Length: 314
Ligand code: UDP
Ligand code: MG
Image (cartoon, rainbow, N blue to C red; front, side, top):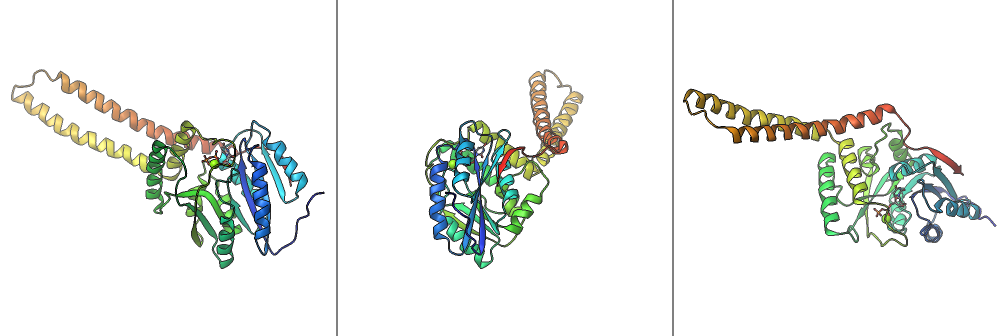
């Protein structure tokens, strides 16, 4: 027997990106069922987005959909990344507000009660903020720290413990989805769109099952991509590098001319080599930074969709 959707006052759409989550979905569903009984005055719908999983995630999702008609399924034609999955879920939801959370229950479901309470008070964006970063290696913590310091500086908000676990009012979700860029950074865009917001802190839980889908390589690319999509500062660094070289070069040049007239212009081989190395190094770095932006412009100008949906079950 398929459970019927009740008809309460508010509807919360819970958006869940899933990539190879066959082991966690059952736990997730149980936790959500328990939660839905605790939320007073609101019903939930769960939008599970299969981000091109290689295991049986989609079959598991469909089985849950058969059992419970509050579950909606979207399946991508291949792995497009968590960002794409979040955006497609937000576009598919019909709720009055949206909660984005991971499938592995690292985001504690009870926090949604607090988020919903704030939404009822009139807050339009409720940011889930990590109390601690959970179990991570020292190097991971350090790298993540450096990245979030940079992003926080650009955004002028403290994003160090921010996460993708958020509640958005329908207006805020629509605003985020209306942005036309393809290189999205959901975590920061919810700050960028504004709206009346508040933070809720939560303790990062252990993954219920399965393993993390991120490798250092993937995380590194993700960090770089997000920095570039949020800031032009690296391009300004190129200008600064150029000016520094010019200044050093000017002093060096004057010295060279003076020593020529003083007749002590001999040797100079080491300084020449040094100059070439420094200058070409600087040029290479600068070209690399400019290249990264050109690549992004190229990506955006192609205007390809952020994701392709293979199948949908409402
Ligand atoms: N995820 C996704 N696409 C990807 C990688 C991850 O949809 O390419 C989902 C994943 O299924 C999970 C969430 O994003 O629901 C967070 O991923 P994970 O738990 O692997 O990351 P971590 O919690 O370790 O940062
Ligand atoms: Mg996780």
